Amino acid sequence: DEFPATHRAIVRELREILQWWTGLRLKHTSTFGIRVYRRGSMLIDHVDRMDTHLASAVIQVDQKVDENGGWPLELLLSNGTVAEVYTQPGEVILYEGAWLRHGRPMRFRGDEFANLFSHFSPLDWDGPRGADSKNRYYGVPADRLTT
Image (cartoon, rainbow, N blue to C red; front, side, top):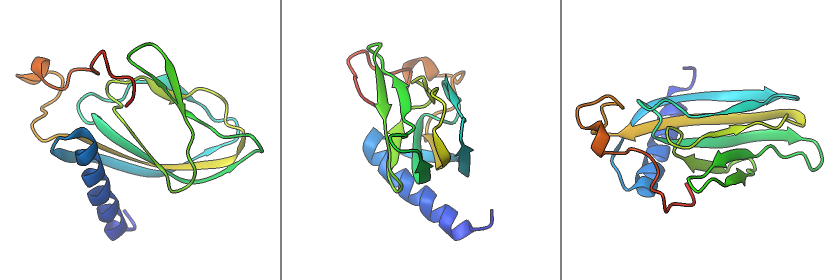
């Protein structure tokens, strides 16, 4: 890591935000990027790792998109509907990547789209195969319509 102080500051701030959002004490599991996507890129819908990516944030760092080009993050909500989230540089998306299918399945229309990703899990989470995992953090409640 070429910028350890910046990395620590990002992790510290995102942990605070995600702890407020989830109401849980969280441990940091990974932060990576800046990942730059180029014209024609796509991100197939997927679910993140259940051992480390329970509470996640993506920071929109920069974008150079075609006119009317945006590149939304799509989330499949628990009620079966799809939400599209558009961001501008400096904005953050909070999501539960281990539970919600998400991606950017449309081809990117623009020159570049730069994101930074950070992931956390609850302090007492020992993974999907842990001793008490069936009783904790297992999926999105049926009545939740947003992440």
